[in-house]
Length: 438
Image (cartoon, rainbow, N blue to C red; front, side):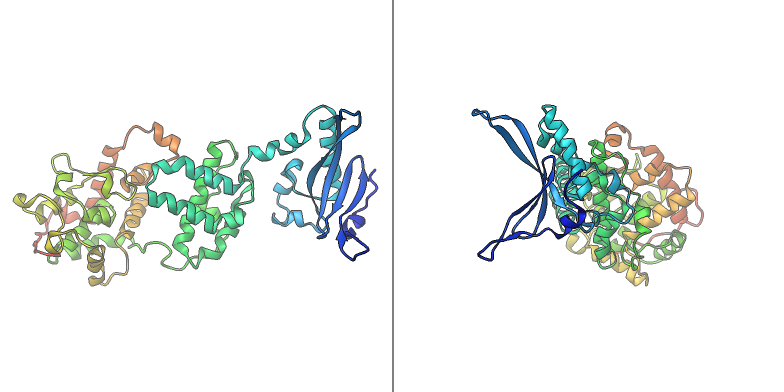
């Protein structure tokens, strides 16, 4: 039984010298365990072990730091009340110890020393095996950045270091749960909704990477689980999307107007569920009308990855009726002075129609429609149609198909739903009146 009591540990103070200055105090508990009180008042546990003898025959002693003294439950404040991780955290990894925990840790290390093992190496072995979240962020970035463009790589690192590492950085990556992520996201969840969503996604990437390296056994917490612990974000946190049921009426109304470049590009973006940037840079050389495909090169895609779009009958009809055969070269949708359209020129089409949605939001409209109206089409097919990455890095390495034929069926169904008057076999085809300019 040790000599010290909990009360003595709690009340331990440094020695005050004759000059009035505080000096270190050492309180001995027994069996090599000591409580060292620094002049600042900090209390730390130290274990003194004997490792053989010196050349002169005297015992060789070694002092091993165990951690700071926990007198007020400070070591438990990093975890929510009743969090099972507190009891599951291995003793050797605990940096703040009660008197009982210090005795237990000292006894374990003392046995290792007597058995001839290096107690310091054993103490640190498990801590070095599992990185902290901050270390895992760096490892994830270093491992994956070669597949990103420079802007994406910098944004990944900067957003996590600024918004996540201050809260999660010191936690072992295998100990992070939904509640920890919620606490990290809470300060920006409603104030910076778009940023918060990106940070949440990137935290998930780090935890998924950690799982792939064997640093954690559990998958990243589900996004729905995290959202349930956060306040509802105000409208605008995501791109405003038109309910998919309203899309056919909107397109029908637009087809009844003069078809300038901006309106045609807007409709083409909706029918292909594409980003506006790719549509504005689309050229006729990328279009294969016979194969009914749009071959998007990497340099016009957000992810800098080439992507093939399956063109529906509606999308093809729009292209063919908008541009006479003899003019099909270069940019499809030309702006002022034959240059590419600006993003605002497409947004203007929606504003003129008195719509508050964004063009990007129509990708969500398409995704909702696919989920509710085409449940027999696998989830990944709709994701591929949106040029989204599917599955883990390992899954993608083994997935040798782009599922173009299934995407073709999906996009044809979307075209028939969204623009039946343009689809093959549909009655009452609307004649399009092309006008110059945007």
